Image 1 (cartoon, rainbow, N blue to C red):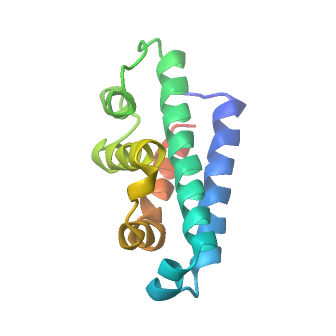
Image 2: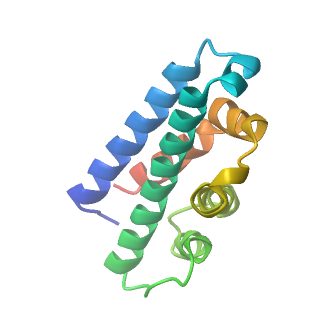
Length: 136
C-alpha cells in the first residue's frame, strides 16, 4: 500500500511529539512530576496530541482503503489490523482510551499513571509509526 504525504507528515509530527515529551521528562522524577502542574499539563497535552495523530492516521488509511468509517477510535484500530496495517490493535486501543480519559475525565488524571505512560509507554507510539512506515 502506498499512502500520501499527509500521513507521512502526521507520522513526523507524532515522532516530534514523542521525542519532545521524552526529552522534557528525561531527568524528571515522579515526585517532581507530581508537584509540577506545568510538567503534568505538558505530558497530558503531548499524549493527547500523539493519540489524536494515531486516530487521524487510522481514519485516513481506512478512507484510502475504502474500509468505511469506524464508530469509535478503537474500531478504527481494529480495522487497521483487519487491513493488515497493524499487527495488534490492543496497545493503540489503550492509547485511545487514555485519550478519552484526558479529554472527558480530565479532572481525575492520576499523576502516577500519567508519569508511567509518559516515561514507559512511548514505545507504543513508535511501534505504530514503524508499522505504518513499513507499508511504504
